[in-house]
Image (cartoon, rainbow, N blue to C red; front, side):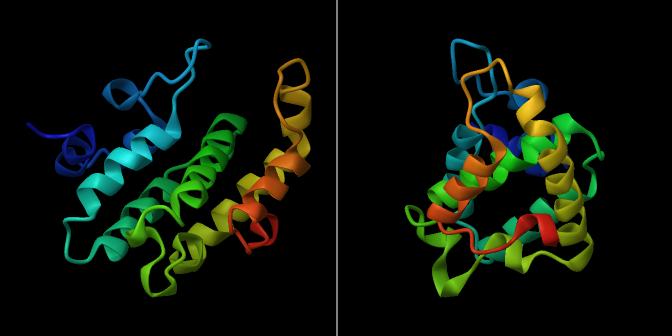
Length: 156
């Protein structure tokens, strides 16, 4: 039986997989939110058996970033995916072997899109989440740094 990640790969739906759209939605809380890290754990379980796992991850993440719209929903999902990556980076070898860093490995077009979306988050994140028990945007950035993200994502 194929995992949802294998289905996404075979169907060329990795962008939907990263977004948690449709069959790739991983219900993770009482609020009905998508649990991004669950998809990342499943994906890593499959990727660890691939010969060029890091190259494949870079390629599919570039595809995901390339198809993001410049809107709040996609920007927030990007933050969640990057956070999931850095949460797992020191726990799953393929995410860091040979000094690999997913964000550093991306092409310039993808990095520029990430920069745009993080600047959008800077403007809207605290306002959109004002009534929710979430961290402020600056806290999210600090948490990413504590997890090992040394890249200034807003200035890509």
